[in-house]
Length: 187
Image 1 (spheres, rainbow, N blue to C red):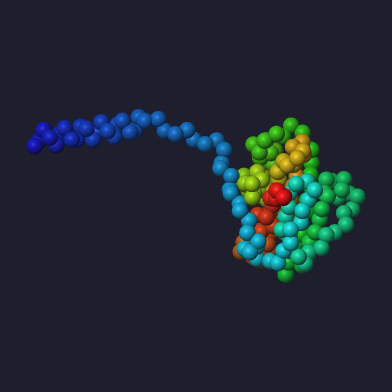
Image 2: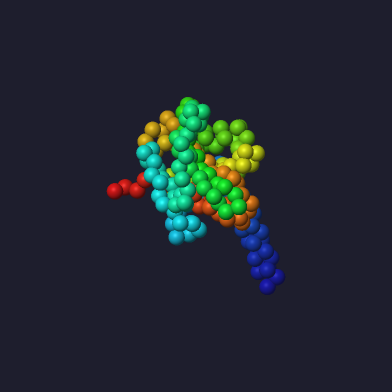
C-alpha cells in the first residue's frame, strides 16, 4: 500500500511537472473587436436612418435637424452635422473624413489615434463594419473612425458630443448613435 501511494504521488508530481512544461498558447497581440449588433427598439429614442452616399448609415433622433456647414467646417473635412435638444444638454453629431495616407489597417489607425492623445480606444465590429471607437475628454466628444467602405484611401469619422455623465440619457443616446453605425444594407 505504501508503494502504491508513493507511486501515485510520483505520477501526480510528474503529471504536474508535465503540465507546467507544456507550451502555453501565445498571447494575442490584438484585442478582439467588440461586436455591435444595433437594435432600433433598444435605442431609447424615436429615430430614423440617415444614409450616407459613402456606404454607411446612422440612426439619429427624429427631432434632430441637419445644420448647414460653414466653409471652415467643410475645409476641416466635415460633410454632415446635426443635432438637437438632448433634454438638459444640447447634443450633436458630426461626420467627416481625412486622407488615410500611410494608414492601411485598424492597427495603424489605433496607433495614430493613440499618438494624437485619444483615449478609450476600442476596436469595434459595428454591425459588420470594422471601426475604432475613441474618446476625447478634453474636447468633450467621442466617436468612431473607420476606413471608407468604397475608397479605403480615406478614413471616415463620426463624432458625438457631449460625452455625458455615466448613466445619463445623453450618454445613452450618444452611445446608441455610435452603435447604430453600420454599412448600408444590400438591396
